[in-house]
Image 1 (spheres, rainbow, N blue to C red):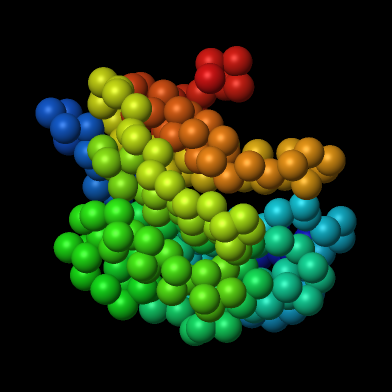
Image 2 (tube, rainbow, N blue to C red; image 1 turned 45 degrees about the vertical axis):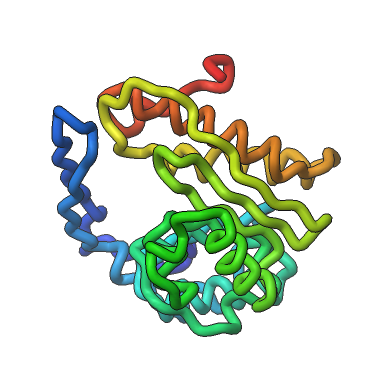
Length: 228
């Protein structure tokens, strides 16, 4: 979502160089943000038309710009899925009315004001998730790598730990993005007339991410719907 009235022809597209460790499939990312960091709060004082069914945001553009977009979405009654990576503390009003918060262990610890060791058991995961719900988040998802995914919803209430699927890990690049993408697809599909089931959405997203890590690359590794 980029304001059509604000072209910046002098800027280059942001570039990420990804280095993959072959024995483990883990990656390191070298980022040149370029145009990503040129976005300003004024660019998102109001959402452009047509309004999206769901606004998905990370923290890879300046935080003041993210906050402006979140508030504009709230004013327009557009649900937001926030994946706060790279992690940094956020103002409490960000969470008020936030439809979906998707974090990994590190992000949950930073935003929740706890240590990662506190999240090594289900009680700790439930405790930090409840903090977010109490601040106004509707659905909290915490991805745990090989341990699976913990979810908790204010709508129900519902909570649970979905085990990780077995996968031959080749490259973890885009696993998180794939998880968010599949989860968001379920959210939008439910909004167009279905009923959103958080546990089913987490299972599908988990399955999609597991497929992704079995292939080398980013976009090429993302599975098609008929592969799930």
